[in-house]
Structure formats: C-alpha cells, structure tokens
Length: 336
Image 1 (spheres, rainbow, N blue to C red):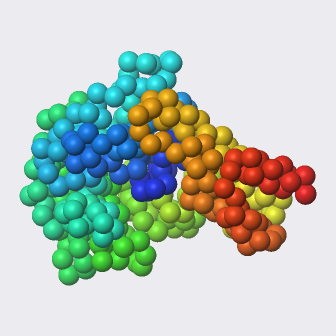
Image 2: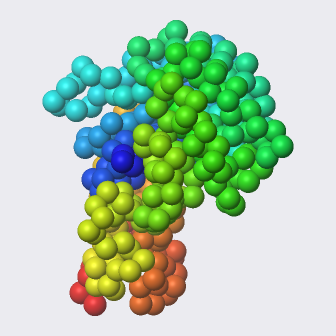
Image 3: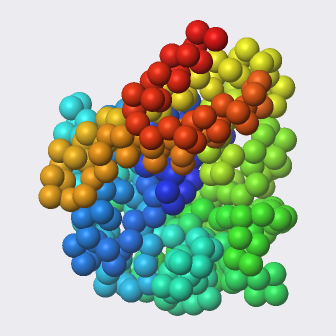
C-alpha cells in the first residue's frame, strides 16, 4: 500500500513535505493554490508552488470555480521546471489536482472546494478546461456530497472519468462533517468497485488499524493529513509492520524522533525561507526570525506531545521569537 501526504492549507509547504517524504510518504501535495491568485498575478500564491530538493514526487493542488482561471493555473503549474540538478528540464510537479473537497468557510464562500460537489457539471467543466492546458496527469479530490441525504459521489466520478482524469481521491466524509465523525468506508468501497481510474482513500486514518480498514476497501493508496501534523513518521510506521507505532513507543524512542524531526524541519524551513527571499526579492518574504517563529508556532510545537513536561516545554517554545532563541533552547534540551 502507498501512503501519501494530503494537502493541508498552512502546513504542507516544501519543508514539511520533504520531512514526510524522508519518512516514507510516497507522494505529497502542495497547499491549495488559488487559481484566481495565479490568474491575477499574485506572487504570494506562487510561493506555495516552490519546492526543495529531495521532496520526491509532488502534486500541485489547485482550487477555484472558474474554468478559465483553473485552465490558466494548470498551464502555469505545468510550465514550472524541476529544481533537481539531476533532471533540471523535468516538470516540477508529477500531476495537477483539483480540490473539490475543502469544507472551510473561506474556500466555500468562493464557491470553490467542497462547494463544487453541489454542481458535478461545473466540476466536469473545470476539469475539462484544465485537461486541455496540461500534459500532466489530472486528478480530482472530493467528498461524497454536501450531507448524508445528498450523495453526488458517482456523478463526480463520472465527471472525473469523462474529463480524462488519471485518478480520484475521496475524503470519505460529507462536507457537513468537516474533518471529524464517521468515515464512510462503504461509499469508498463502492466507488472503488465502480471506478475505471485509481482511487485514493482519505479521512480518519491515524494508525495501523484504521489504515487496514481503509485498505480493505480496495483503494490504490491511502492519504494521510491531520495525523501527520504531529507525527510525520507515521508513513514509515504504517509501511513497516515490524516497526513499533508511536502510541506504544518507549519514551526514549519517541524523544529521539521528536528531537530529530524538530531539527530537520527547522533546517528545511530555513532553506525554504532563503529560496523564497532569493526568488522573490520584491515581495514581502518574512525575515529569518519571523519565518522561524511562524514555523515554530504552526508546526514544531506539535512534535513534543506526550513527553515529560511537554506542556511546559511547548509553553517555552510559544514564547520564542528568534532563531537564536530556538537554537539555544534546543541545545539545552539535547543536553538535559
């Protein structure tokens, strides 16, 4: 079974994607990239499409509701080249994905994300327009429908297949459920049975038991999102049945993993900040200290769950505002 990192707005930038790839994620997705932002020349939108060496295959996920803007965005994403010295002329992304599943009010108000499930014809129109502008595989990420009494999953499958998609991901919860509650594996299994294209399952996988339940539906791959935020080594845990899962880890192993991912993520964040500052000198790219503080308060504090005095340690992290303070605290932690 392949395990892939889900697109998570505010989380799956290049630094986090590389961290997960090094720990077994077979594929990862960018944060949601606004098609309207690209069409209107927004540089900050382009920041989301930057990559780092060693990430492995990355899918560019676009969101929007206007076929013309999504077609433009698909073309722009397709034109970007790899930054790998081994294959500098290769496409930067391995596929383009349309988000028709994000339930966040900010996205839905734009008639994008999960709002699209209300209109399978519009999903088809968007995908068809994108397909005409990219040579890369095109995929769709969606939900079964807006609510349990309104299932449009199979109309969405028809839209994806008719538009020439190479695959489809189902977050097996309704829009009304947001990111919690029952995962409808029965619908996922039926989708697999009906589909002529590969299906990836998403939603509610956080350990081997939940992964096995989803795998039993017949999906080609399993997408993991929120469970990876504090535990990016989950991909390696799931792929290797002999590896002890984090929930049963000894304290010393968990502490070593937490320290390791903290250091690695911090260094990758610094590398990403330097790349953005170099490529976008006219933009407001956060300073090193501001970038580190954002990364610290978004990602790094999560890595210290369930260790001795975790609450106190995270509180100290929350008070940090500079790279020098981070390094001093970690030096103290490593020797304690």
